[in-house]
Image (cartoon, rainbow over all chains, first blue to last red; front, side, top):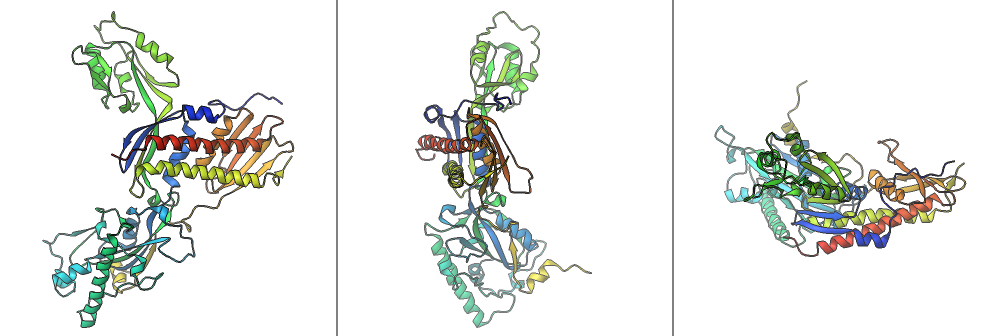
Length: 392
Length: 127
C-alpha cells in the first residue's frame, strides 16, 4: 500500500499562534444595513461556510400564519398571504424562541400583527355609514388606493382578551350600523389606540414600512391577522436575514510598464467600471480604482495588439517584474499592456442586512453558529468515541 | 361548472387560513453523527444528519490541512436525504477520528480568532 499523500494540501497545518498573527480584518464600509470588510489570511472554504450560514441558518422572524377575516379586494387570499410573509419583521430574533409544532403561541415565540384597511379610526372619522356604497362605489374616475405595510400594526399579547387565541374584533361593516355595533366599533378604536401606545414602547415589534401590499378600490376591505414566528432561511427565503452576503478575492490590476498616448485613452475607455484614469499633466495611464474591477477582462481584450505608431522605446518593464513576485496572486487575464489578477488570500466580504439585525452583528452571529456546530459535534464524538461501530 | 369567484367565499364571513411555509418545522433540524471505523482505526466514515455543504466543505478543508491525513472527502449521497458523509484516511498508527476532532477544534479556534479581529475592526459605531 502506498503511503504518499493523496490530499491536495492548499496550505500548511493549522497553527493557532500563526493564524492569530496572520489574520487581519479591515473595515471598508460600515452602515446600519450594510457592511463590507477585507479579510486577509483566511481561506475560501471557511468564508463560504459563513456565507451559507448567513443566508440559510441565521434565524429571523417572519410572518408565517395568516388568518384572513375579510378580503374583498381583487387579490387572492393566498397571494396576499404570500406577500405578507415576505414583509421583513423588524424585531430582534434573539429575543424569541422557536415555536415548535404543538407549542402554544405566546409572547415568547410569536409576534402578532393586524392589518385593517380602511382603519377603524378612519371610518369613524369620516362619520359616514360604514357600508361599502357610501364610501363611494368604484367609478372610472376613482383611482385605486394603495395599501402599504405601514397599515400593519403590532398586536401585543397583553392587548388581547384570550391569550393564545385570536379574538377577531367583530366589525360587520356590511350591514347598517346599530347602537350595539357602534359600541363594538368604539371598543375597537380604544383597542387600536392602546396598541398604538404600546407600539411606541422601545420593545415594540413592527414591520418594514413602505412596502406595497395590494391595491384596493373604495368599498373594498381587508382585515387580516398575522403571526410571525422564528425560522431559518433554509426553510423559506423570508427568514433569511440578509439581502445579499457574498465574498470575492481582491482584484489586482497591473500595467506592464508605462502606458500613454492613444493606448492609454483606449484602455481607459475600455473599462466599464472606470478602473483606469489618466494623469492630468503627463497623460500617463494609472490604476486609480483597483477594487472596482469586476474581472471582466475588457481591458485585455480591447488592446490585444500594439497600437500602430505606438512608441515602444521608453516602455519600462519594471512594473511587470514586481507583479510576478507578488505572492498569492492568480492571473485571470493578461495582455500586452495589462495583467488582471486575483489575490487568493485577501477577500472582500459584503453583508447587506434586510433589517432584523444590524448589519455589523450578522457576521458575529454566523461565526457563533459555525462554532456551535463544531462544539456540538466535538461533544457528540467525544461521547461515543468508544462505542463506534468497527468494520473490516 | 362555473368557477366560484374568490370574493364570494370571503364574503360569507368565513376566515380562510394560510400557512405560508412548506416545511412542518421552522426550528433547526435534528442533528446527529455516526462513526464507522476499520479495524486499525486509520479509516473512518462519519455520517452526519442535519449538516450539508456548509459544514462539509469547511471541515474537509480543515482536515486536509492536517499532515497526518492521507485522504479526505465528503459527499451528500442524495439531495433529498438529509445526510452528509465524510471519509477520512490517516497515516498508519494515527486514528482517523482524532484528525476529525482536531480539525473541529481548529475550526472553533479559527472562529474565535476571526471573531476577535472582526470585533476589533468594527469596534466603532456605524456611520
